[in-house]
Image: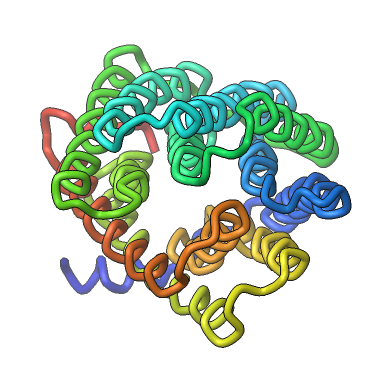
Length: 327
């Protein structure tokens, strides 16, 4: 990596209505998770947060509500497939196949709809996280929670000014990108599963990250941001979980709401900084749904992210599969 690339890791992009978007998303997360906490169902927080992620989409689109409705299909679809896979006890190799197919179809769907953030990443993450937690939750209940949170987020997204939209990819570029997602996700999942590692879905999610941007340099930088930002976020996660064991559900829910604001604030400007907050957010809501050893959770996330991001960078740099997306 050249000195210019190293310096670019610390650069911040221009502001793009970040604070307003971060406030909308934080409120969109706070409302459904707060309601679940009051109802005594904090373990369902993970499904509400993924539904609320609709607020990440179309922050400056001229038709934000329509944009977020399309994004909700991707996110709620991921939750539905994931929780159904958990309920059916799908094997690790089966999950690799399911996630690869979802990444391929989700990429085509996201490009066809012109979704921003681009690609199927958050839908994939919803699928993988939902599939990795205990199968004690009925699929219909997880679907209802995710859908309800998505609708709340869409309602909140109706407020605020918007700007110009983005053009969708051509059919050829869209297909090439979908093949790249299929290859990266499947290879990362297969390697993780063959090595007997826990949570291969994290490797598959990390492998998809570099493909969301254009240009080899940008893809390498995005993958590097994924690794560095995740490692930093794991330090923050350890500072939260290790000294106090497992905090009370109300504390975890409050932390999830608080962490969502800086995640969205920096998501466009510097992906690595956003991941510093996004990583503990994801792990805390995973702990709410299915508590495990904090040390094992942190170590496995670090290893899986490094594996997946490396695979994603290699696939993204391969000229046959690496689609060139307009900036």
